[in-house]
Image 1 (tube, rainbow, N blue to C red):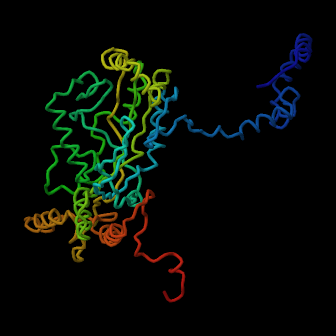
Image 2: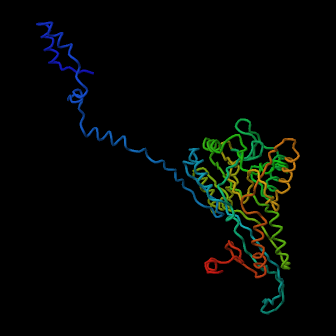
Image 3: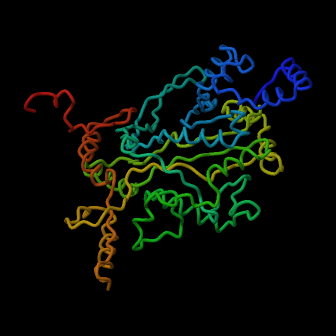
Length: 443
């Protein structure tokens, strides 16, 4: 753009009036060069402004900082949060669940043995100034051994986020179990709830992943069902369930994220451990159980009543004063009372099946519990009419039950014989060489 001062323009006008030829010749002059235009004082900017604009362009955007929600750990090790932001922002709730899922649950194998002993003792009694002595019998419970083994150390890999199928009875925002989503939700029938409860118990005993429903059966494609593909069985994602929770205006609502360890046949392992204890000729009362703790992340309403109910001492006082039954009625039947969301969680593998390329090496899974499935798949592929059948090869990743039992069998037997009582979980078999021994030359 060519800028002409007002006084220059007036001079040109006067010149044009006096001598039109001069005016036309002056207007026909070529425009100034680029260097001359830049040197003009009208186009000059202060150096400070140019520096500030350069500095502003060099500044990086602020780094995203995740929200640090407030929470506390209950007596059982569960994570409980009454943070107000987690109750209003679905993204914050989703990120909080992902961060807490990085910590696997605590799984231990507890072995307890005890017996009862009946003893006789002399008792002195005073009656009307007379002292009498009599004998009485009493029963005392004696603990023979009580120890546990850490199973959590064998969990590997990242957690797999799962959700219940729409047809599975679960808490989806009300105080009773439902099936379906959104407007299609309905109250689950008693037969559906009972069937789901029976299957959940069986699934836990056999160590199946939580995304496997009761329609599961041993079939040819069984190893692929055990994989971590398509584990979000619900039509909604975890984020959508988080948004649904935050959109609810219920006064006593809670969102529970469950952590489940899978991969081992826990019932078969329990029976094997019992056989080891019985081999020591122990005849007392025996208890062998797998115990799981620190396996729930619960987000609850941020009002005072909800916080009070999370305190077990205040809740105990509410029971004593007969106030809690009225709170339960409000929570159960009022439209703005309570609501539960128990539809998702994280799965942590102790062992899982993965697909591999076709191999010509001998079968290295002869001891796998899925051996029959592999043989069926191979036989089906070999009997196919295709010239080059696609043989489904799989491998077991992680420690198998038999490997674990071989390592710990002797330790369990010696712990029973030596009447071991220890509250700290055992992490290493006692027949493994210590670190100090391994560093010795020639060991």
